[in-house]
Image 1 (cartoon, rainbow, N blue to C red):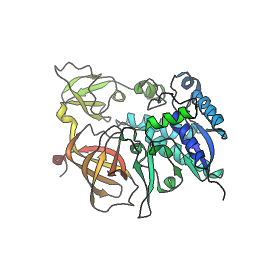
Image 2: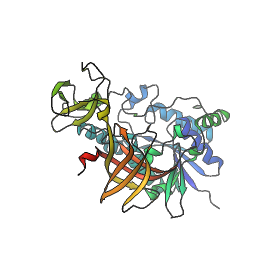
Image 3: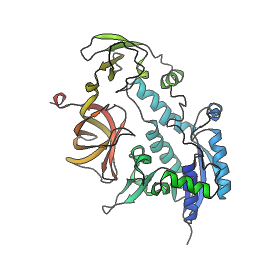
Image 4: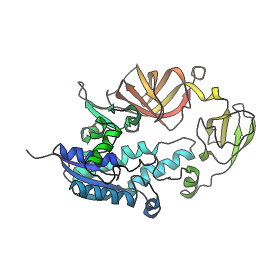
Length: 367
């Protein structure tokens, strides 16, 4: 029987390297591919931990492929990455929202684009080094299951993969802890066994999002007013791209006590400031829904929801409110529900689905 062919997206890190090794050990015909996505290779290559996009990543991935004795290629996805990730990142911040570029990259570049090219060259699957597991359910659907170790789980960033994408995906690393993955890499003498994990947003290595946006758009980021929820002007801000809901540091406001960003108003170029309790909300409205473990739900259902990557999750009731909209009401108010971020719904360890947060809700605001 012919061995199944799998294209492994190799970032040059330990997780994807061990994923390639594990699949080869299982008898798959493994092909290593690094996705060339960054627009300025020189800048990325100079970074010590250039993540998954620079020339150093290519060098590391190539050395791993040689050690594993598997074919290795570099595929150019620069245009897809710019359109689906960088342009989206900039547009969201300019609209007063806080985007999650890793989720966009996963859905539209690492899966949609890489999977298409992989199937075109005769592969049966693509594989990554993500800490997540794929399971098939009795209802005929595939979904994600949390990884073996909760602290490394990456299902939140993968919630919007389609059924077709899941059917052609392998995630062997999700059954292991990070320590086990590093041990395997050391045992088989992989050159990246002790390589540090890369930072989250690979194309803004210095974390200065506002500078990146200003340098990559023709739009001048202008100063505006800090205001209270009643509209009182209490200071000047550096431009809305410098702020996100829940932020406390870097406001440079002399209020005598800690204050927080509670909302961003791009239409008036205002950043709303409030007290700690003002950052909490009882619910949220989301759209751009994607379902995994179920095909849809007509009314309401109980779930656990995560509103950011490092959120522990909170019990909630999801209510369908439109063709592509749902409300999520929490048992307890949640802090810093942020427009632009994802909300992901779970049933235990299984991903039900999720969407993009439009705004926070409180009972008095919904009549």
